Length: 200
Image (cartoon, rainbow, N blue to C red; front, side, top):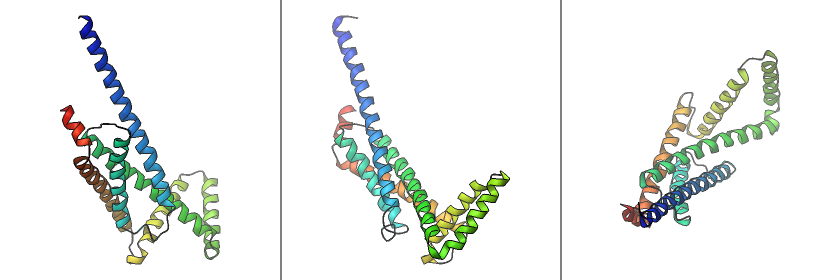
């Protein structure tokens, strides 16, 4: 191996390392951004979190944001990896937002004067569960989340389990599809396509 080949090899390795670091930076920035978005969505007014429509809008925003962050950081992730990342982050973001909204809704109902008796009964049940040392507290959390999913659908009728859970699962699928579709459209229309073509 001559000196020229060695320099070319070193340049190739440094370029690969720089490319890997830029993609890692991009993914980290996307994760932080989607986390902040999910927390903001959980604290948004209820009239904004429209059932069905909010999940699709959330996915569209995430899909656009993932490609936008890649453009700002001059990262060049592959098309499939970008679409997969958008779908995965939107799915995790909506799950986190729903869980946070459920906790906020539960704490708000606990502070309400109309639910003072129910709050006292729940605390008594939790105290007995803690005294028994069983696994019932985790089941209580699951039951509280199921009750929140049911309350979300009150305006649409009286839906009993498992329909609220199935509806939420449909929303999760919808947000992942919306995020993947939007990221794919942004890649096709943006400068990332040119970078991909230049690499191929």
